[in-house]
Every structure is written in structure tokens, then in C-alpha cells.
Length: 426
Image (tube, rainbow, N blue to C red; front, side, top):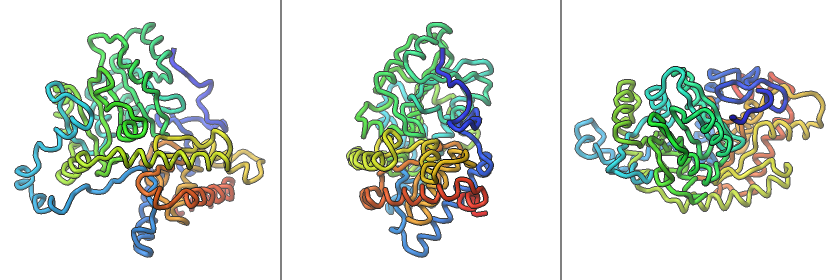
């Protein structure tokens, strides 16, 4: 049987949204409000840079999201004619190498986002009533960018948090149409390698496919020192990110069996999901220049930070999220309530509380985290990734900025109007 929670609520009794798996609040009620929060954060960054310069923002997002384009590339991007001569077909071999794939069996496609890869893969391969078994680390969830298209296709998603429970259901119900594995979740929970490998070794029916959402592959291989995706086991299709601990643009590096990539790729081109010229070139540069040593160094810095935060906020609340430190959204709420002095139940839910901490860290201290600029559906956790600017900022200043953010949250946790102003500028 799958692992289930006793009730679909958070720690404070708020019902969980069935797709994103966190509670919606009275301020961040859904995707439109989360987009407004994201755009507001971008504007705060822009205004700060205009006033104080680029170095006044410290990027602890774990992402680059620059163009990845180098000066020598620019003359060949003036139109598609020089682009085809200079670049066409050059990124895909780098993608195969980056993910440990076999060019004789696999091919690659560069898409405009990891989410686009999941959308087009799952809506192409799944039909109504198909069983999808998902293995995720304990404490994590399958990313909404996968859960949404599974629901759109009419397939049935069943989530498992251990290899043992997955194998039991596999034996009881039979092999599913699709196995989807998430080695590292958006909340930065990490699946033990033996469970990852064991899931791929389960006996498959002829119709069973394995899809790996390895968006965080770079930190998985660099910090956890695990093999590249296709070196783990029998995988049909997989995707990783070109900007998560990789110095490239936001794009999906999509690799799989040649027949599946051809089938899925045709639909991707139909719907305009393929990477455009600048992205395509930037991804090639990012993959070519990827340096695991930089990510490992960030992880060592995070190991020092986690102890510092645990001593401040309590054992187990701050946890290693690969080369970074995370605090779950419900714990952020609890810490703010304790600082306020206890009392009534909070007026804010986890995604709002973590968002306020992130927005205040950005506004007051110039510390940019995923919680400020993340896309809707991202995990409601405070995430402090040491790549790329953790070393430049330093542990003491990171801890102080976080404390400023939590202090501000404790002041507005029962004041929806002030909280709304901090999140949405209203």
C-alpha cells in the first residue's frame, strides 16, 4: 500500500491542495497570487541593483538563470542562418554526456524548462486510467509540474516514500504504466541512492516506462557523489536542469530512448516547447563548463551553516538540502509563533510564512532565495543554497538575514494586511 497521511492537512489543520501538496492561504490563494509575489521579488531585485549595484544582491537560490551566452557566440546569433552553421546539433552530444547516456541508445532534446519536459512527456505517454507510481524521498512530494500533467491525462498518481512500500504495491497491483522517480525534491529532500537504484530494478511489464525527474542532478552527483542519471539503472526517459547548480539558462535537458524522444519531441515542437537559439547555445556552454567541485565546496559551507541554525532554532528544524540548508514551512511558522510568544493559531499558512521570510531577507539584506523568485507550486520552505554567493556573503551574515526575516514574520503572523503588503506590495 502507498504511504498516506492520516488527514490531508498541514500541522495546523489547514487542508492541503491536492496538486502542490501545501495549504493555500487567504493571501497566496493560488497560482495568480504566487506569480504576483514572484514578479514583486524581481522588481525588488531590480530596484536594489539600480540603487546599490549588482554586488548588493547575494544570490542564495542555487540557480544561475543567466543567458549562458559568451561574447564570441553573439555574432552567430544575429539570425537563424549563422546559428544553424555554428551551433545546430552541438548541444545534444553534451547533454548525453552530462547525463551519462549512451549515444547508441539515447538521444537528447533541449526544451525551454524542466516543467515543459514533464508536461510533454506525461501528456504524451499517459492515458485515462493509467497507473503512475511515484517514488519520492520521505518528507517530499512529486513536483507539481509532474502531478499536474498526470492529472490532465486522466492517469492515477500513487505516491510512495520508501522502496519497501513501492515494491509491495508493485507486487500487489502489478507493474504500473509509468514509474516516476524524484531523487531530490523541491524541498531538497534526498532519496537514498539504494532506493533510487532499487526502484529501477523492479520487474517491469512490457508497457512499463521509467521516468526520472532529476532536475537537481548537478547537486546529486557533485554533493552526494552519485552516478549521473543514466548510469544509475534502466531508465527510459529523464530530465535535468541547465540552471540548478549549473551556470546556464533556465532550460530542460531531456534525454531518453531514441524512439521515445522522437515521439515526445514531435509534440514538443508542435507546442513550441523547444529551447530557442539563445537558450540552446547557453545550455551547451553551461554543460561544457560544469564544475562539480564548486558545488561540493558550497555543500561544505552548508554543513557549517546547518549546525549554526540548529543551535538557534532547535534540533532537526534546519536540515541539509544538498549543498544548502532548508527549514520546512510548518517549522518556519512554529518558530515565528514561539518568537511571538505562543497564543492563537497563526493566520498565515506555510507558503505565506516562508514567502515573507524570503521577501524580507531580500528587501532588507539583499539576500535572494528561491522562496522569493520561485515559480508557483514550489515547496513552501526557506531554502538557503550556498551556490553561487554563500561564500561571498558569509555564514554570520546569512544567519543574521534569516533571523531578520523570521523576526519580521513573527510581527505580522496575525496581521493579514501587513503580510499581504510584504508578499504582494498591496
